[in-house]
Length: 231
Image (cartoon, rainbow, N blue to C red; front, side, top):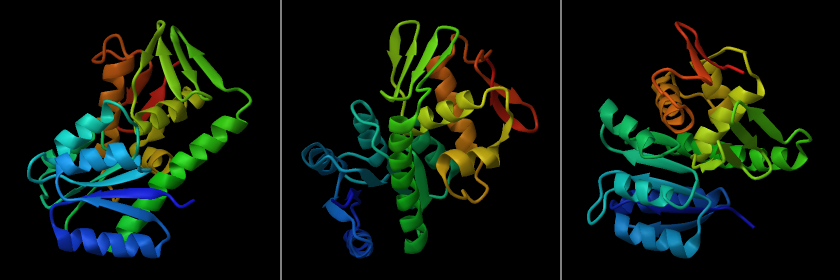
């Protein structure tokens, strides 16, 4: 069965172009033209990935992203006509996995879609095959069979990207990775030098797993280089 992709954008021409090109790649595509309609279609169709515009009537994309993150970790790629850095960062803060600024190349977007879906599939396969499927660190348990993180007996709700970053760093504790290396290893493709994506995801992750996010115990910054997981 082909993966199902939900495209939510109020520009009908863009929806038509994306639907045509994604279906050529073998994906099943469902569509919506505002955030409220997108939420309804999402609940009915349970897509494997969302392409989500930010500026839409009735309910904007950031609000829809936030609502979806209350119940699902499905990969979300934000689409925005704005070039301002704040829009990109807000999308990531609201739980998006990726973003693209309009106008964008269809081939590049397809590559991003494939990378996000492939990453999810690889993680699920690895978790089924993983022999050492539980990592334990000072009150925190990363259960790779259940795709869960438990801190002091409480389940911590993470997005897929946050979980993948935590798992990658924790699996190779004490090893320092540059932002570019993390983009390649965790995001799965070149991110065209936008290393702020890593910083935002690290900040969100620290807010969820650290007792004192400003004085982290687990995810440590190596100034001028990148990040590592401290055991």
